[in-house]
Image (cartoon, rainbow, N blue to C red; front, side):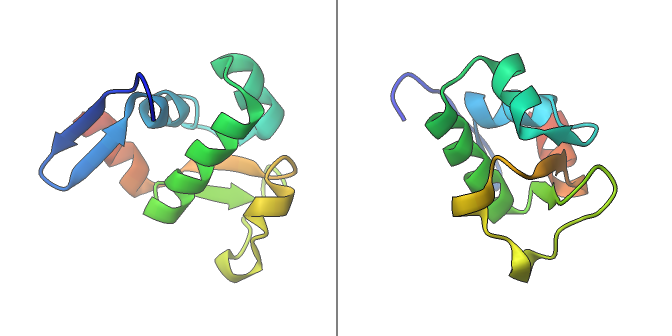
Length: 97
């Protein structure tokens, strides 16, 4: 990704955008909140969220209280409908940066 620094420490590889997204996910947040707060393009935010979910640093929720099962996720199609929260691993990676 152009213009983005990559932070590497041991096994932690995190871009600036991943760091910024995780910074907003200490509490469950809807997609539109992230889009407004981070002021990045829709496709770019989707890409970062997919990366974070694949790394296990972010969990997806169907509602503010109901976590989505990983086998039921349709992230490519329904990413705007989900709510997001940093996982324990994501918070540790974020704080370790």
